[in-house]
Image (tube, rainbow, N blue to C red):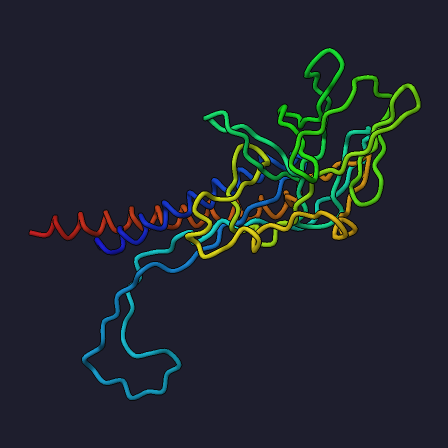
Length: 279
């Protein structure tokens, strides 16, 4: 009975992580550029007991009895499928049309240092930095980087914005002049290695070299001729790729599994009470 309670308890903790992941997906169903997460389970350590009685019958499984101790969440995997596009008719709204391509964003850390992070959230704004200049920023106020990793800064007498092929942003001024910037775009080859920071932003983990990866194996900065591979559309936003019907189905299944394991603990406790009550 004690083994049953331990196995069910171990599983309960892991199922709770799955339910938290599903709940986070549902909460971000309308978040721009959000990618759904999925909990993957694997078997935990199990013990094998060899039967003393020889079993002469043909069987497909190894001999012996195996006692497991539950399952665990081995990985929270990201679904990188393309989300639907929503037309906004706004000049500073951009949507990727290809998977695994991300905007380069400059985010300060707790020490005031500027780190490069990545996001598919393309609703940008302008923020004044002095009397005559403004900077292209995200909805949270982080600077959008160009292909060289520098903030995109331009004069404030802007008439309109135009997106050209290969991710070039043209700033049209009131005096009929223009200035062109290349939006910084990175293709993430191994998204499962990336670390989630605040909101929709991803960053390289601090110990990615210990994981056996090189930065060039994970990220490809789209510069030069490879910018022709960039898929961007203007006046549109990529919505979340969360399938609400699927998430609700997964949530119901997870809740039933949670209830089953909780019931197993209750039954084991009742049986132990009966055994201890025998005189």
